Image (cartoon, rainbow, N blue to C red; front, side, top):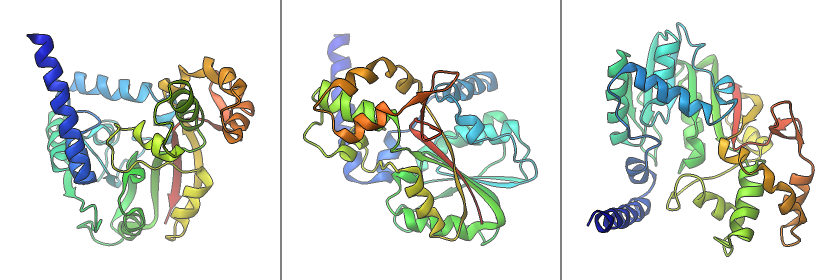
Length: 301
């Protein structure tokens, strides 16, 4: 009976996911949160914070949460609050604001930050308009981690982030990296060729299905120079810092040479994989940067 119930539950969850996807990002991210767990103690919450960062080596150094003392901080796309906990616990911000398209996610974030005794102002983002109910030039630091590659209207989002940021303020952002093992090895070779899954789809469509659930309505990836140019169009100065890699990608390393040897793999991917070097941690390097999925940038207004 339990097996039957589990299968029924899995089936219903798939139906729910597809229905949410049809309704857009707000609906999807209200069903598919990065983390729905509730925590009974601060220690459990912090353990999850450290665990999540540990599965993306290098991430927390590129997207720090411990350097925001005295700042007004906006976590743009805060989801269920992991980085809000980081800012509130490891910094002493003047004000902490969490904004997201998903009201259910922010409800979970509020419960988690309340557990820590962290005061947060929460703002709902309309995925079409992207308006923030904040004064212009009012925020010292905008932090946006793994969010803008899901944005329905990314240019509107960037325009609004620029508006609320103070002159001289910082915008630290992570988006999915085209120049990564996730795209060139996991998507192009392991999924489309070796496992013959999504092989009829364009590369970026297959990539979309392999990041945040197969029904995720929007999941883009950018070459670092491409995203940097896009952000600068809105008046920002700054640059690509580096990428962090996932442990999922690190586990794929033994497949690199098999992929290079496969003549059915497009030359672009074979060239990328052939050119990789490795640092002292055995993390793959492309053009001087980590070849991981999380491309991290720092911009100034």
